[in-house]
Length: 275
Ligand SMILES: [Zn+2]
Image (cartoon, rainbow, N blue to C red; front, top):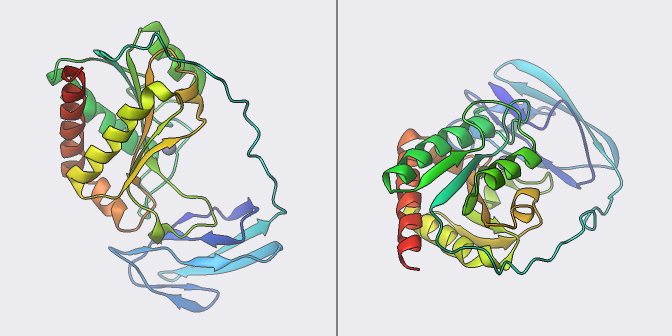
């Protein structure tokens, strides 16, 4: 029924591209049949030639043309300047938590093959986590409680103004063009400063094992919200791959999110009392 990714016109320096979407039966890409993987979801991967690549997609009798331009590779790995911070004054006794539902407003984030937007799922999960944390005795500040645009600077300043002891950004994962959606799944916790590393490791490990999901562990990454939140512990949690045709069917369920919120709250409560 829908092609979620890539957009009709897309530029990339990758050598391959994946297609994600949802159909009733099967689809045709350049007249070749593509079968569905799971629950009506599809995710074939194609090689790209340099320059313009055209794909004629036929889903349930409706045709669409997708144009992808493969550009020369540009190295952007040094775009950020890394900051150093020793984190000596960061408290381990976190009582006040800033919960940050990733994206919002015109920033959709990624999508599931059925078209569920990451920004909506992030918010829904955060509202559940908020009530779980409050039941466990935490004070919770949300960076957004509705579908609105919010800059990365605003997210950090909300945590700072409210003197939060822990900043937790909630996301659902996507993958770059050149990877196969079927080969990437699971939970990861992204941190920047050493003072957040142990909590990130434990968080990812415990949640993954609670749900029988793959543990991708704590990942050191230079993200704005974890780097600029140097005054507290700061973790960006990827709660599963929304783009994965099978995993997405699990993580969009209410029941999963209720349990996830419960386990996360319990974990944070236990981490606090251990100190
Ligand atoms: Zn995201």
